[in-house]
Amino acid sequence: KRQGINAEYGSCMVDNILITNDKGEIIFSKYYNLDRTENPENYRLQSEQNLYRLTFQEWSLAKEQNEQHQVAVCGDKFIIYTAVDKLLVFVTGAQDEDELSLSGLLDQLVVMLKTLSSKKGVLSETEVIEEYSRVCLFIDELVTDGVVDQTDSQTLETLIQMKITPGKKDKSFLGM
Image (cartoon, rainbow, N blue to C red; front, side, top):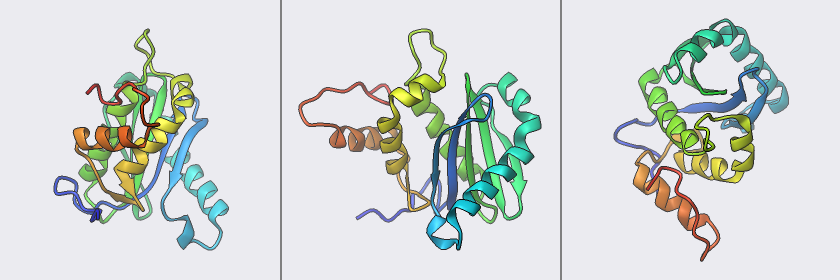
């Protein structure tokens, strides 16, 4: 049984993961604590409004510094984000955790997303939409119930391949 604790990243608590296009339109979102809130939809809306309010002015900088991490603080949460070609990727987690743990998680997400890029080499929302089920599988193996669970690239690839239809050879997420 998995313990949900990784030696490299500790027991980092993740609040949510968002992937948006460069205009901020959400392509993927996963929240890990909605069952602990009275009004999940209001919590989600409030979280997204706060995220946009605190990071929007820095999106152009994030896009210029493609894949360099930016940090914002919202109440008791860190928001770590970066641009990956035509996408923005956000990870929000508890401020009492080390933001470097969230940054390490963001690194893994970037590696996975880069494998989706088309022959042009520029990642856009089209690739995420076309490979949505793989993105979900990857993130589900990476984070379980808000805890960074698995960060070893080889293990992640093996777990994902096991869940893909048997007998169907699928391209590797992480280039393995």
